[in-house]
Each structure stands twice: as structure tokens, then as C-alpha cells.
Image (cartoon, rainbow, N blue to C red):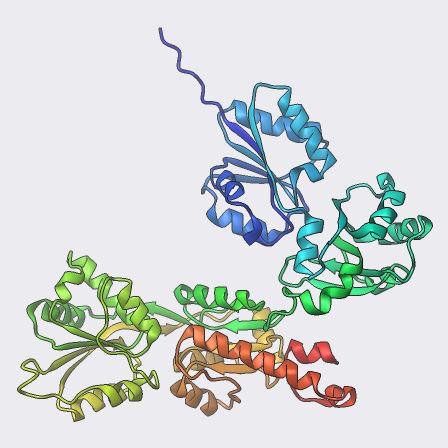
Length: 526
């Protein structure tokens, strides 16, 4: 009789870094994605846990670490013995915590397979995000117990170079007293950073004498930086100086499309809030699209004109239903109203023949679309797959140019359900610093389901038609990019924020307080 060996699991002690999910190492990411059970410290930010859960196995269990080091070690060992892969996810670096070192020692006394995956230490990582270099002989530590600190050694570190400590905000007074008692000059520069590497990271600078009062209101873990490096923040601070840092930006788009815009906003430091205003659904009767797809295959059309990413998706979904692919577009030329739509077409392996070089709109496309020529264009029909609420500008313009147009409903746009009450209240009361509209329908539907944005909210629109609709609804348009695309729209909003900051910086203090300029940039100057 052959015995089946029981599978053996692995244990990993994984450093989460200082909080920004982007600072997880590849090895840490792989360990978390492959884990059956993740035990996490309470010091790991919820935003990082959300990012990990989104990529983890669907059946993975996430539980907070509770009890003594021996208790946590028992949970990990038990999981490994039952064939599971277990991870203890800790803030910063695993060996930066005495309790985790004890857990590793406990696991090492067994036959369990384990590894320790380093992470960026909280103190060093947050100091870098705060723009505080730690030159020379430096000391950086993630402190768990202030009573064990050697303040004489810390004072010597300040004398020789720089110091960075990750501590609980409630221990700041004890650290101040310890540094002063050890002989550190009370006028030495100090920085205190809360929510390090997070969306709301904030750094206050003062001195050893005054940093406790300056950090009043900080809670949880903070990073204390001491020494000459603090004085370089004005030039080196980058995380908090991104153009849209701290801006709460409303993103009213479909659920499928909001993600790409939000990612770009986050890169500029904004805090996006996605509010679906439109849901995309198939047409009520599929007969039109069925005939259109058959006509594409049979050579009925000279051109297909795509006016949105949703239209591209709708046609390709219909192709997939019939087992067709890009090869069946042979002989048909494709025009796209803008770069985003063109990118969607290219994703299916086809290069569009026409994209407006100027204004990316129906008018811009018509300006560059050649009239029908019976000799050069033996096939004189154009397929225009669009939304059910699309305007007639493009179809009418093509007809005037001698083309026959099959204006086909490829998809329907329906109004989404209203957002939660707190978001509706924030929209109407000025709780959002900016709102980005990418179509006329997003304007109409947002106002319909949530009300008009407050006058202090910066309104950014993707193009002239959207601007017209916003104006019709009584909104002041502040930002409009030269080209109608999501990247250009976000770039234009970032540029507007920079201009705002420069304008406010040039104002005398009294004028700043009376300025009607809105947004978090203005508030920081007041």
C-alpha cells in the first residue's frame, strides 16, 4: 500500500513597506498572490490591503494578527502543516519588528519551510516620500517601544548625520524629552510626517523644541526626521508637491472606463472618486447590428466610423459571437473620432486610416473626411455604429458629402442609479475640488442623479460639445484640453492646478485670504 504524502505549505514573513502598494517588491507580490492565508498587522494600511485582496486568490483568508508572537507563529505553522501557504504581512521590514523576529525564531525551530521577504523600512521610505534626505552617517528605525531607545546614541546620530524614526504619535513627547536630555540642540530641524506614502500624507516642519505642538492632531504611526536633511524639503519634497496632491476629484464615467482615468489622476496625486453615471447596455433589438456585421463581411461598406470606445467594443463583441476577427475587416477603411477610440481599434490589431489631426470631434472628423467620389469610391456606403442618444451632426455631414450612411445603434446608454447620500451631499456642497466630464451624457446624468456640482468645484470637460452641455446646465467650464482624450484632460487639469498655485504664490497674503480661487491649493495658502 502506497501512502500519499501530505502536501507541505510554506510560510513567508513579508514586508509591506511604508504603505504605498506600489512599493511592494515583486517577491512580496508573488508570495501574497500565492497565499492561502494572510495574517496582517494592524499597522498595514487598509489601502494596501485592498490592493492585495484584489489580486489574491478568491479563497484566500485575511485575518488580523492578534496575540503574542508565539500565538501568531502557531497560526502560521498550523497552516503550513495542513498544506497551505501562509503569509504574515507586516508594515515596513519584517526584521524591523522585535515581535516578528521572535515569530521567525519560533518557526525556525520547526521543520516548516519559511522565507523572509524584505520591505522598505517605514522610517527610511517615508523620509524619502517627504523629501528629507538622510545623508552621512544615518540612523533609521521602526520603533515599537520608546522605553528601549538609546537616546545618547540617537543624539550622536543627529550630530554625525541624520535621524529617522517611525513611532506612535502618542510617543512624540517622550522622544522630545529624551533628545533634549541627551544634549540635542532644541533649534535642530525636525519633520513629522503622518499617513506616510498615503493619499493624505502631510509633513509639518519645526524644531526639537516645538515639534510636539506642531504635530498636534497627528494620530497613529508617524515618521520623525531630525537633522540637516529636513531643511532640504523645500527643494526635494515630491510626493506632496505633485500638481493635484490632495485634490478630491469626481470621476463620472461608466464602471468600465473610470479605472484608467483614476489611475492617471492618482499619478498626479489626486484622490479620485468614481461615480458611475452611465451604464452601457446592448440595443433593445439586435437586428440592426446583425445586418451591419453581415454587411462588413460582404463588402457593403467603404468606411466604418467609430465615435467612442464603447462602439468599438460593441462591434467586436458582435464579431466574437459569430466567430469573426480582425481579418474580416479586410478592404474596409476605419476612421476614429479621437485618439482614445483609435487606441481601442489598435488593440484589436487594426490601424485606423483617419484620425482628426485638429479638433477631435464630429466637426473635426468631417473637416478631414473626403467627399464621395463615384470613380475613386465604388462603394459609397459608411457604417456608423453609435450610442442610441448620439447627435445627428456626423451622419448629416457625411450625407452632405455624398455618402450613404447606415446609422446603427450599437449600444444604449442608460442612467445609472444615484450614488450614496454622502457623495450627493459632497457634490452639492463643494466636497469635491474638481469634476471631469468626458461626454455630454456624463454631464446630463450626473446632474440628474446627484445634482449640480458646487460653484467652488473646478469643472474640466473633454471637448467643445461637452463644454456646451455643461454651460447649458449652468456650470462654469474651467478646463478644456486642446485634444479630446482622457490623458489630455487629466494633463490639462494638472496644468491648471500648477497655474493656480503659481498665481496664489504671487499674491500678497491679504489678497490670498480674499481670493475666490478654489481647490486645495488655495486652501493651503490661506
